[in-house]
Length: 347
Ligand code: NAD
Ligand code: IPM
Ligand code: MN
Image (tube, rainbow, N blue to C red; front, side):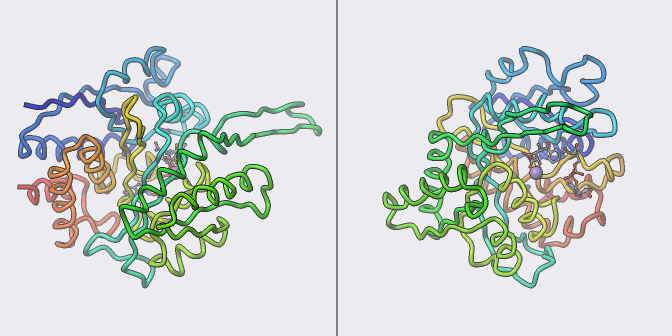
């Protein structure tokens, strides 16, 4: 029997609840699919930081390297640990160290879920650059605390980084409706974003079958609200992709529905699967976090592992659950109720 080694990092707040839900569904999907998961849970989190002074041990990355995939909940507990410490100590280093340069975030409406928009027929695949750009961490502060203080955060875009994410997006567009929207702000940012547009144009010549359009990020934000059905694959830099995918989550009914996969396309290291949302301190401990985003992220993990039938079965179970009106209205159903409904629908 095929066995996959999975590292679970539930993290903070609702990350713990939704990861447990996803794990229950994945385990059941595995036994129905004739394969098995060997899971190991890591307590790395803000609580771990308070106890040990680090978000993960020094050899954390090397420990994770031996796994087939990573299932993550959410990281961050800003009341106790600054986000700049917790995220730069756990989530962001994993994405970078494992070259998970493609962050795939699907946005479509599940049956029975109400969008705040009138639009229904949208199906957007956001491909977010995930290892460099605005998140490079380069910069610093001088003359701190004085009137002359200057803070600099430098975006770094490499040819390797830009080409590989755009190529990935072009290839994805080929498997879908053949449309690619590339998002920049090249009217204002004349170095990095002009460079991105140039690479997009050059690659477009290699993909004559793909209809490519470049949009400015501000116009894209409006388009996602006004005409989301006009979009197919949307590719954007790290920060722009981050913002657009919370917008994508909103139009699909809320953050509880938005799934995400941090993919290392070359398979030289494990990929990581996590919902788009964070630890939601405002609802943590209430037992009402929607686990659907995490379960859907689990389905993306199954797909990545090659267990496509199991992935389809999990997606069908999610859709049967929401079609029955369970988990569709934020805060109405308990996390456990939604999870049990998905488990029953999987049977
Ligand atoms: P958030 O995504 O945690 O919450 C934003 C809003 O969405 C909140 O009102 C929350 O209650 C709601 N929400 C989120 N997920 C939900 C779910 N599954 N079901 C129902 N409602 C849900 O964003 P935030 O408040 O900006 O961040 C909180 C913490 O999480 C911060 O420390 C932040 O840095 C961190 N964060 C981590 C990740 C990650 O680990 N990938 C992602 C985003 C934010
Ligand atoms: C996400 C999150 C992270 C990001 C934060 C917590 C650093 O918002 O996964 O979307 O911006 O990548
Ligand atoms: Mn985000």
